[in-house]
Image 1 (spheres, protein in one colour):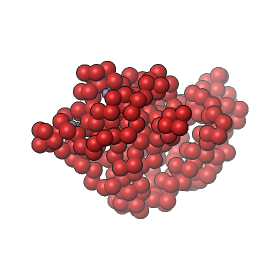
Image 2 (cartoon, rainbow, N blue to C red; image 1 turned 120 degrees about the vertical axis):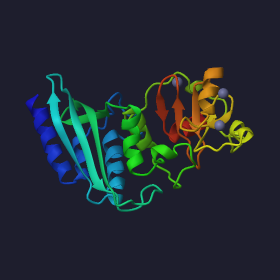
Image 3 (cartoon, protein in one colour; image 1 turned 90 degrees about the vertical axis):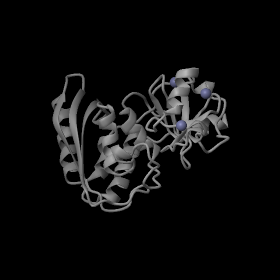
Image 4 (cartoon, rainbow, N blue to C red; image 1 turned 180 degrees about the vertical axis):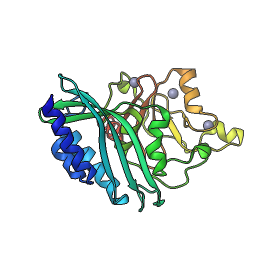
Length: 262
Ligand SMILES: [Zn+2]
Ligand SMILES: [Zn+2]
Ligand SMILES: [Zn+2]
């Protein structure tokens, strides 16, 4: 697929110049795994919008696609490198002046003369790497502490870095949701132990509220083990994203909003 490789080289050149608007013309409306439903924004615009926001806080942001290999079927791989200086406030985290560098292997699928992309390595160090460098999560030795900054990163960014995919993965449990609003704002089990937590989760099946997977006691994970209830939401600040333990699936708050309406 010489044509596809040429298109990728063109995109690479634009990204190296910091021209993220080019993403709107090179990325497909489709996500890697599925086509967006009617009214749902396409992948190209969502990814370009996210890059725009990053660029406001990291004005010298550039990207590069290295090690590009594309098979005859139009499916290929590359290594994406993002690099820029974190100068200004971003999603509640102050600029650090640090140079951010994040290297991620990506899968690419040609759709006509456009591309769908997916991050391949979603191991914990990889997925936390970018958001930690941007100070959207605490440093590794402070993961059991309350957040340093009042951050509110976009659900879409979290979905990208946590799952690798811009689109939703299937989850067999959405129709089991019974409770969507928490009745408490503490992890009672931690309160009883005299401990603190960085963030709170709420079980969408029974309403149980417990501390997150980076807390000392991981009470929500324990709740999942004990009850088999797999699906929970964040109740930090106005966050409402959903995670399913059984399907490793992340959903933005809009999924919960749609569920409330139906
Ligand atoms: Zn599920
Ligand atoms: Zn707890
Ligand atoms: Zn539960």
